[in-house]
Image 1 (cartoon, rainbow, N blue to C red):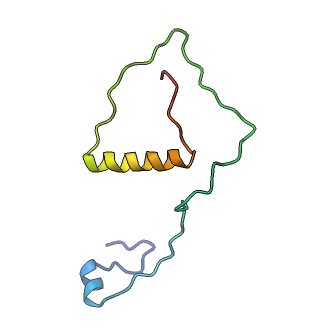
Image 2: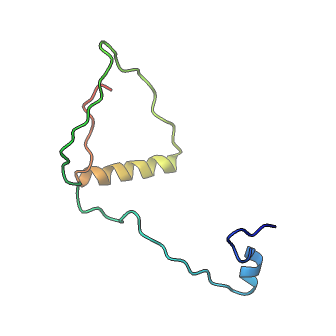
Image 3: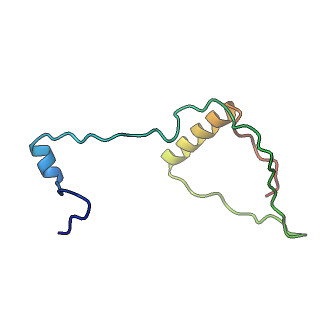
Length: 91
């Protein structure tokens, strides 16, 4: 087995037998609670649509009941904080 940049390959059985502790630093990439919306940027984006194009009706993605419950909770939380609002777009 080529080790590459690793000094050793240790399996879970060895870690459990010797009650080894793996120490690693975890960086918080996303904060647990956002303080608000980011500042307004000087650039505004737009999507140019094809003239005369109309929205296509499509059923929403299917979710398991547990996923749907989590989605509803997250949408409510984001809506309550003012981060999102119901869409008024025909698209």
